[in-house]
Image (cartoon, rainbow over all chains, first blue to last red; front, side, top):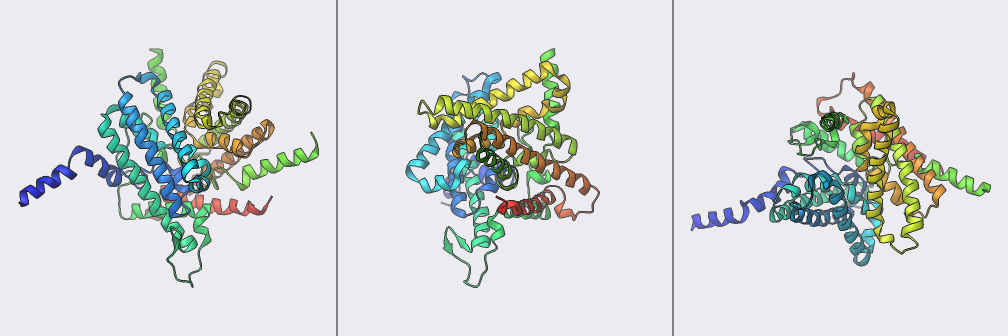
Length: 248
Length: 196
């Protein structure tokens, strides 16, 4: 019986598909470990609700783009793949934006231009380029689900933290006692930088895996994909190599 | 052009460059801000390249929106069209600069392709549309936003060059102290809020 149970668990949670989900949620969490997509992470996490809205919108775009690119991967010539990716991702973003406008206008209003800006979110391009363009549709789908959920949960956590300190609520519900004086700094722009500074400092302190202290593995993007530590030099080197190749 | 219009342009300039600073209050272009700010020289290069691209992109996107998308009722295509216009523009600028001015290419060339995926460029183009700016206002807003970007990235690079020789607690070395610096800069820029 025990053996059967173990086998069931293995079949359900240890196959290559669920591995992609746990990979996105924990091992390569886009926000906490890979440190990608910092712009929306800092900008929209003024409340847990905004974090949830942004996270889910990004997740939907990521899942859809991953599936489409994986399905088309054999038809897209690798030399002009970037324009293809841009058009697919931008179309998905437009669809999500129109859906938000129609069904949850309040979220659309709160997130403003950060919804169309999902197009230039490095998580999407990173996953599409590094994973979906090289793998089967099923795997790409679960990779998108894992990464999308990882991003959503990270944004909700950061959003709740800022909301509790900045206005004493979570998802709009009062959680702090009446006597608590909200620290408005945390829902203002400086608070976003401060929260991220503390987060990365804690990661350094406890030696947690993170791209910011070099302990997470580098991504497979051509430029290194390490936006946080990039000084443009990796790119410059690649640029020279490519120019030399072209001249040859 | 009457005085009211010029005053309006001045207000757009100040609010885009200082009050709604692209980096410190809108969080657009955080990657280069944290990444390319370790030397003043590269920060200036990145800043100038961004200024050039954002200003030209504002002009192009504003023209495309006003004369193509708006009359044809295709406003919902703006995200797709803008990102393609920006990507094409960056490629085109790179080719032209390479052909006609190798010195400029060596100084700015490597930063240009990085800018395609810089959210500040697309963000400013979208803001121009959202705020109903006409062509001149869009140009001023684009230039001023890019100026704000350049100012903050150069200040950041200056501070980081000084900090290199400081004794920073081990936990805060690298990324965290850069973000603490950004926090203090954001607080300072928040002081501009009552200006206009």
